Length: 330
Image (cartoon, rainbow, N blue to C red; front, side):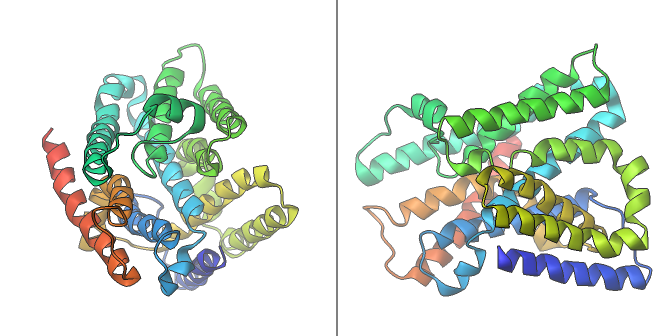
């Protein structure tokens, strides 16, 4: 976490300089979100490699998982709300038909592929696939829990925002209630910590999308906000960490993506490499776990830690590019 906060500190210093020089950029546009997704998709691979590959420099990313995922959730909620505000109820026409296949088709395809490759490697087929998922949060494809959460959030968003009797503020509040319910369910069932700790960032993204233009940006452009917002957030984070209460960490992962959201006002991420990685970010996320386990399997086993980590990274990017183009055609 210290290394992640050091990056935040560097961005904070840059934002102060940029603000002093009069450079002020609006927050997430499409190129910025695409570039940020590209960076985070690579960082999440490096984070998961820290648990398996004994590569010294990877230890820097040891605690980066939840902060990265919380930013992904925030971006998802933020983008949904902005799109909804542009078209209102007409945005919901065909919403599930457009959104769910983009998540489900890659998830189902790559999960099936992993089962097949796992059978070739070990001669075994996973048992109790659905009961393990519902009762224990164990997914077929390694690290793919995020996809299941996003599917739930998309369904909840569609159902809640289809309610004619509620105004938009009430709908957004109801999304928080649903998210809390999901957190309680996964926590009480003993799911992995990843299932619940960063979930609140999604409805927080909805709130940002709802109020950012008229009620948030006018304040964030001021010098007082630019100077004191990040230090205040760091003090809140320090208090949460010092409390030792794990449940309070769910609120820490609201604060962290808000910090990133604010600091991204001062950063331009329009870069062809980042745009490319952002375009294939979902496939990168889904595929990397498969390579991590298969390259340390029974048929193939890389003894060299550096060669293993490099091979996972290269094979993930190549296969993610292939499947991204395949899914785009589908």
